[in-house]
Amino acid sequence: AFVENLNKPQTAPPKTIRVGYAQVGTESAWRLANTESIQSAAKEFGIQLFYENADQSPKRQIEAIRKFIAMKVDAIVLSPVIDSGWDEVLREAKQANIPVILSDREITVQDDDMYLTFIGADFVEEGRRAMRWIAENAVPANKNATIRIMELQGTVGASPSVERSLGFREILQEYPNDKIVYTRSGDFTYDGGKQIVEEYLKTHKWDIDVVYAHNDDMALGAAEALEKNGIAPGKDVKIVSIDGTKNALNAIVSGKMNCVVECNPLLGPQLMKAITDLMSGKELPLRIITDEKVFTKENTQETIKSRKY
Ligand code: GYE
Image (cartoon, rainbow, N blue to C red; front, side, top):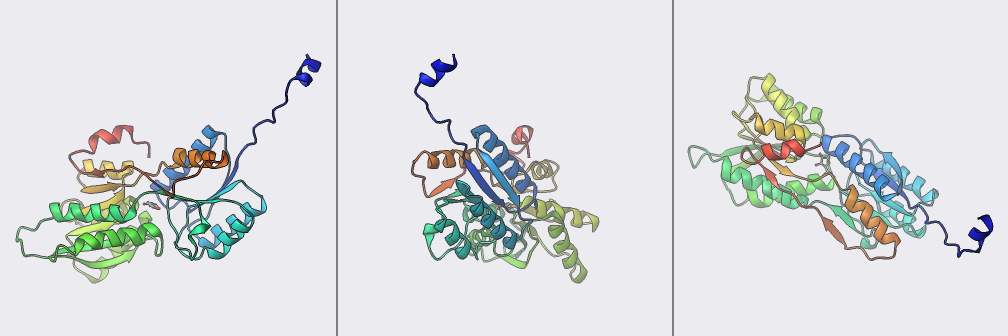
């Protein structure tokens, strides 16, 4: 049998694709679901994944990318904490002939040639959707009264923070009675959202009609701080956020939050498919967008059952 085998035409065993993934951190429930999706999709596709969590530090992400370059991986995936500061390290990847794909968050670089494609949501549209919901649902009894909005921003300089602010303001300007009266960064964390509300209450009597949070964790943290101070989240103040995690959907059902604009974290399968295509010589589209919806009291119950994150 041994001899017979030797006489057969030999095909080289398929080479395992090696990918380095520079992840943002573990700041939110969205992020944990995102990481899980990427790791399990890599397994499914038979891709060897080297995963580095940067704990929200761009410096650590740069170190991770340099490590991947030294390891001569087949591709690098970057989910950048912030959108700037990548030119140098991406030039190094380019010189080493290692393709770079952006996952979840975008960057601004002098030369667009620095990465192949971006897989992720349309954050500007998410911001628009949040403000559209407010315009239609936070109508004051007195039509001329001002709607006072508190904005809880994500990480300063992160593309979802920048774009969720932009899209929101784009629609906001159509409603002269609606005003952002307070805006702070809560770094996309539960504690961050909680602290912003606590800080505000130190120097203000509560006078906010709507809290707009750039993600669920901050919204839920804010809701906790409000409750502790005798202000009913979802009732005394409307709460709108972005992501669509199970905890936030549950908060809608229990009436503590009012609206969640979905941002899908399950990017793993699309990403691994793109990498597999790339390695077999196929061309990638420049932008791969995910499909998302808006949750309110009317349509949330159905999704909760199947939601894993
Ligand atoms: O909304 C937030 C996470 O980059 C879209 O990052 C992602 C955001 C997400 O921490 O929960």
